[in-house]
Image (tube, rainbow, N blue to C red; front, side, top):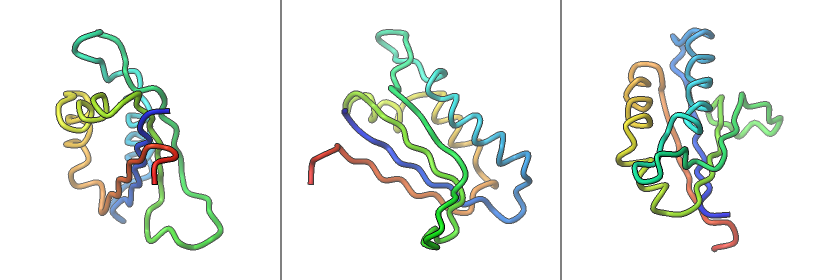
Length: 110
């Protein structure tokens, strides 16, 4: 299964619904827009996400979550540190997000 990359967004109170929808749409599109420099093909195995609807009350202000899957650590490293599409997306969030949390793990490794 490779690497699971979980991202949680807390939007600033001044962020409009239209801005939130745009950010979420663009986050999901990274699966198709992030191209591996060697293969020249998309390298993110999957991206899913949406608005929180948990009744547990432990969101801590985070309203949207996304789960990305990468084949290996090298692909995740490229995504986080070098992929121009991802880096541009992250930069575009300035002034929109109040807080972000990221957790990565390999399934079954404790």
